[in-house]
Length: 262
Image (tube, rainbow, N blue to C red; front, side, top):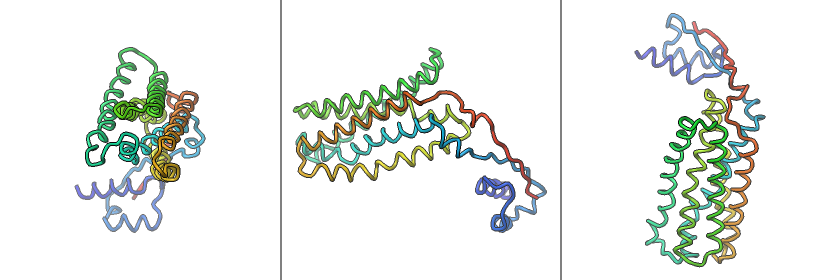
């Protein structure tokens, strides 16, 4: 039992080597792996170059980046927005501040179920579903963010911001599962690449907001709203243009490499 567990751990820990290197052999011998009779090891080579050159992959990555740009902008600044634009006290704005993300959680689940229903029951092709959900999410977020920039009513401001953030779940139902459409066996690698790029707004957006919004005026916040709307538009346009719902040629070939451990 333990032998099997450690051997599986060894194979998972060194997934891209055909023959164990000296330091890997030493690591494995610590657990007595080479006293086992013989192991057949099937390793799949990850086509990193093809992934990086793939337009559909970049469509997903750009959509993920643009979605997170708005998400992190709102996540890190929503309490301040509510205080400076709607005169909500931070101590009393807990529910109001959490409402947009409750809505996003609901649309995320319902959006995914609706997308699967359209593909399976209505026989709508995968690319059409992915495009429409992603672009509808981006367009809806941009629209209500633009409305938030022109309203002078605090209740309407809260409503527009909540709906804008909540519609992000529809967008996720479009691009976030597209990795599985493009390359099922490499979906984890693609998600790692996409999520790495999409994490950058979490570091950059608070700095940009802090640089632009110094006094908390409506004009300063409108710059943030308008720029985020433009980012949403870019994300939707690029995904619509370059996205794919088909298995990619570089993913269709499993690229196996067979080796043995004695």
